[in-house]
Every structure is written in structure tokens, then in C-alpha cells.
Length: 273
Image (cartoon, rainbow, N blue to C red; front, top):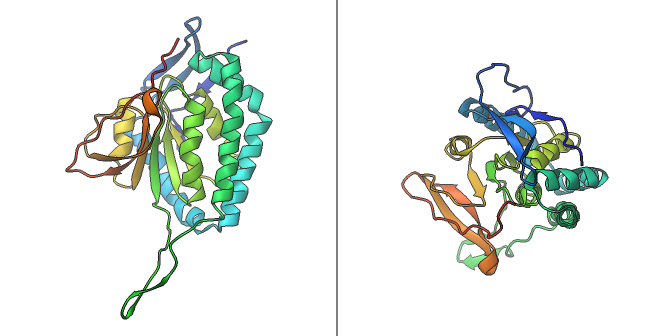
């Protein structure tokens, strides 16, 4: 297939395009034939800050949206991705180096995840309210965390991105998503398609290496970080949510704790070819 002419700024957030010429530019390579297929600028700490501030600005409106409104947006995003499914299949194959047949199996799952969380947004459950001690009534109220930082790995870039953004969107959070600098193309395209249905600032994408990730997880306005991969970043505490056996990895929600070090995660045993 023909390589797309694909250029992307360091950051995708309302009104935050960089105009200076001193930023680092990363060449993205097709692992199958080692040809350069695209270029992208690497986000600086200032870029990350602008993305987080855009997410902050969008938070009051998005967190106040009713469950059925958030569900409708997730369904609309699923429909948008479905209309561009073959394009996403091609990009996923091109950027990761996996067979078209493998990418074609993944994209329907991506769409289904969005539709699943559209349903989940409307059926949040809590423990029953009641009097469990004299003179007091106990109840559980679920509220959005706020701005969340999302860091996805290289091997399932689109699927991992949607596994992170879908529950965060359903719960009323806004977010900054950093894909792997090796395979950001489908995440960039996801963000472009999401702009058609999501309110401005709800989903922001920054492309960069470990320095970009460090700026994201250490940002004071980021309330929670979700990452998949191996990390030695300081100030993080990892709580595992799932494990897929010997061929999988631990996906962790990571909370910022300045006095604690991070737990190393087990990487997936799938190598770029």
C-alpha cells in the first residue's frame, strides 16, 4: 500500500499549535521495509502544559454532561471510526508492521469498546444507601477524577488508546493521551476523527518520547495517570487492574505520589518485525 503523506504537530489541542522552528522532529519508519512513512514533532513540556490546560478548560462542561449525553458522544465516535475502519486498518498495519489481517481483526474490537462504554456510562452502580451506624446515612457518589494522563504502548496503539479513553470519557473525565513515539499514526488519526464529535479540549494528543511522558505524569493538574508498559518514572504508585497471564501485561492506574517509586510493569511478549 502507498505510504500516506502524514504530518502532525507536537500537540493536538484547541489553539495550541506551535510555530517555532526549533522543535525536534521524529521520523516514523515502516518496520516491514524500513522506509520513512511520516514525520512528527516531539512535544515539549510547554506543549504538554498547553494540552493539560485545554483539558482543564473543557472539564467543567464535560463532567456536567448527563450520562446519556456522554453515551451519545461515545456512540457517535464509534460510528465515525467505523466509517473510516479500512483507513485505520491500513495505518495500523503500516505503522506497527503487523499483517493487514491482524489489524483488520482489531479495529472492530476498538469500535465495540466504545459502544460498550457508551452503555456503561448509563448504568453506573453503587452500594445501596442506608443507615449502617446510628445517626448517619451512608451512600456512594461517583464523580470524575478530573484531567487524566494516558500513556499507551507501541504494539496495539489504537486498541490500547481506546481502552484508556473510552472509560475515562464515560466517567466524565478529560484527558491528554501520549501514544508511543514509535507508532503514533492511528492515535493521531483517532484524535482527528474525535474532533468531529467531542467537545473541544476533552481529548488532547501529545506525541513524544520519555521526556514528554515525564512532563505529563508530573504535571500538577493531572489527577491520575493510566499507563501500559515499563516505567521507572519517579513519584508514581501503581495499582494493577488486570493481568493476561504469561503473554500479557499489567495495566495499571497510576496515582501521583511524590514520596513513592513506581512498580515496574511486565511487558507484552510481542516484538516489532
